[in-house]
Length: 280
Image (cartoon, rainbow, N blue to C red):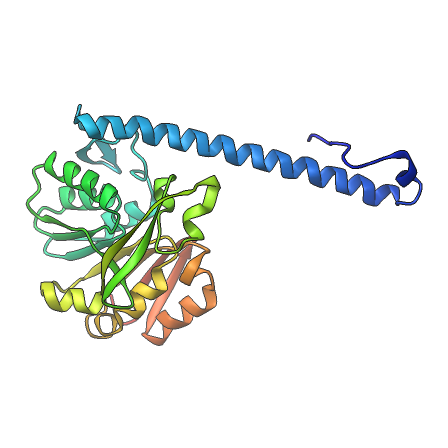
């Protein structure tokens, strides 16, 4: 630990307790280290995304990825999220002839893995960020999958348009301005994107989800509120990657909403597996 002697002069030393002064120096040191760590982390992420974007821009080569024994191709340099525990659970739980909604699909790791394993299933990938959606589109084209459909759309608690904040740290991009600035990121642009309630999307597409994966940077409760009828009528299993921000910040409120619709919740850290109580 680095301790910096800040704002201390001879005239002030005798009037302040030694213990408090020491704690203040430690705090400054820890705070500085935290800022340096955040900047270094942001540098690593932005460097990776820059290199990755070159591969997408020129379409060099979609490499093979392995996710819990399932192979698919993508233009990602690293297999980010390919080894997620939540993906492993879904790969074990799903079966053929299922309809799976991947809401917040990003570049498609979950969707590609599920579609590759369950070739008779119907996978629906939904991603609001147009820049990321284009990458998802390229990844879909690099795989021979006719059971995966993609939508450039946001799912929320209303129909219409909402501002979407695109962060320099791609995975922090969100409908919430504050969230988009996490981890040292900054807002690169703001775009109005089409949004639909989950109930509206189900009605328009006539797709009846058996399972829903949610990774929407804190927007999860709003997505669920826009799908009350879907949850009550169809009782899909829900796989939620919860974030302590936005509408997902208050864990008790999110949990109450699901329990009121007769869901049981298995919490595995920030991964929530929510099953209708009458499911076997």
